[in-house]
Length: 94
Image (cartoon, rainbow, N blue to C red; front, side, top):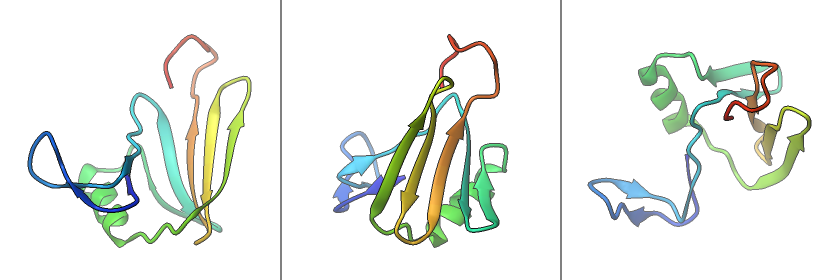
């Protein structure tokens, strides 16, 4: 996910934002109100299509939940990005 001003990618073709969020080694979901837009187990083409159509807006709220270190990022568009642990082993990466 790219945020901020668009800039050329330094390590290859394409465009990156001033800030880049890469969700890796975690379960995640993007939702708005009562609609799930896409999630970590969707086909890559589904995720890419959803992200191209998604207008996030400004970050409104960030919450880090303990003990599992789950993350919620809420945007002023009503879109929420959630990461969540799926294991009781808290030493695993998320």
